[in-house]
Length: 195
Image 1 (cartoon, helix red, strand yellow):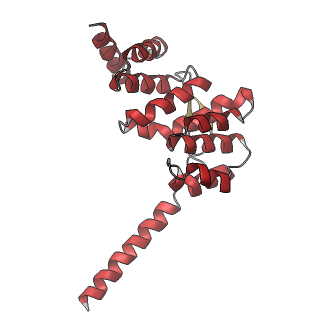
Image 2 (image 1 turned 45 degrees about the horizontal axis):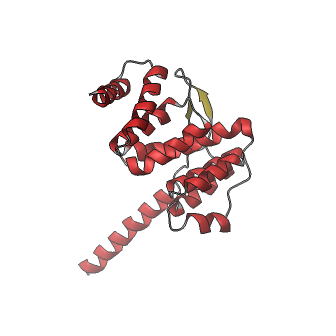
Image 3 (image 1 turned 135 degrees about the horizontal axis):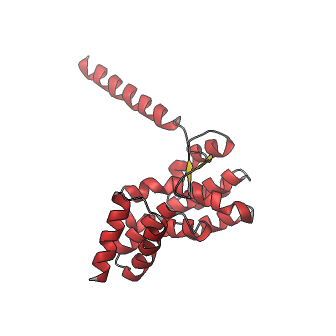
């Protein structure tokens, strides 16, 4: 009898975890002014957010293309951004670029901002190999995004592309004047590059 209770308890917990993970909020674009000259994104809901929430498990190198062909993102600015973010998380940077380019030219930086919001946890987790190309993509459409610039520079440094690291981190410290750990870390790396 105890074995049956144990199995039922484990099954109950597993179902609860799946339900919680499946119904959590997806990040959605809402622009707020930021004193550093970039923009923050706050979570919200909507058609594109719901699409991404259903698509997120498939944002990997194996499934991302076929899933997005079968269930394309909404034809909205947010849809383009989430589609690009999903492709980028799956390592398909060229397809992510194409998705961003589907947005109106003067709005493409906002779609790139969604990509940044989705990839920022990857960079913060230290996955420089994955985060670097995504941050470079963000910078193509939003060149003064200092957070993407910082992560692109640190990724380049960790991966041994010292010239590119120096370029990104020099520009980062020129644009970002707040004397905090991010700036000090960038300055420390630049000092190491000069040695």
